[in-house]
Figure 1 (cartoon, one colour):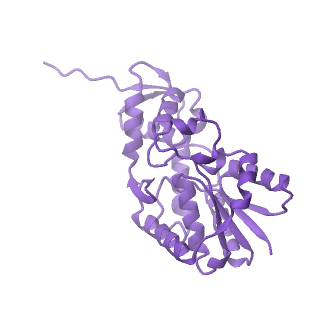
Figure 2 (figure 1 turned 90 degrees about the vertical axis):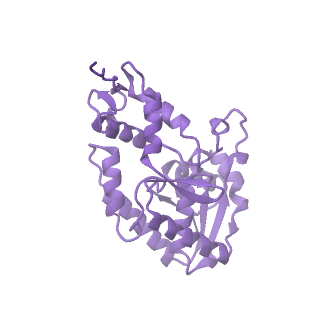
Figure 3 (figure 1 turned 120 degrees about the vertical axis):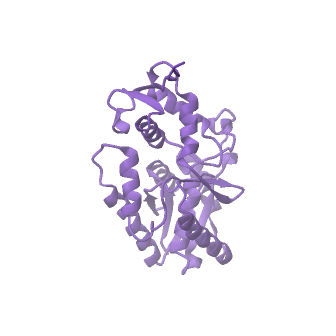
Length: 276
């Protein structure tokens, strides 16, 4: 019987393919494209349009067919549901991985005997100096693990109980219905968050004098360390552009997309003197 492994993101998929090859296992890997931790989810299983519109806005003025990319996720999920082989979902302690697990469980809820998992956590990282240790929440994502670390976890693939699959599928439906701007995962429960949470970090770390936008983005990514939410440069720079449009910070240089991050500079909006 065939086995398909499911991961979130290209880095995780590439490492897992190497791990399987090194273990002499001829098994497929399915990479899901959409980071579900940020942006609207309502209707996510009906059409790629809402998610595509969100990512097009977040990434900025770059020619990329998000509808086609997210449509690929649709096709992969449909294929998984229609297949008869075993499915192994690899997930770590991050919002994106946990939502991906629940989405797959929802699509395979009528074939629970096929669904398995491999759990990853900070305990699987040997290096005590790893940046994961610096995060308040000790969040991890499958993509940060090496192929050797993933290979060591292959024997730990285990079935998910029917009861838990039902609960995971329900939690995915609840997350879609909540339709939060962003999501946290705290004590195995999803909590709704707001773009303003990221905006507050941008405003806190925006310098008074002109400085590289990348430096502020790096600080935002480092200090967004709660609720197992990873804030990437695409989202952080998008929030900078939105704050600049609202007059809350100033951006200098071409800052229409993530491609402009390296050359853009920013500063906090100077305080306006109040006439006496």
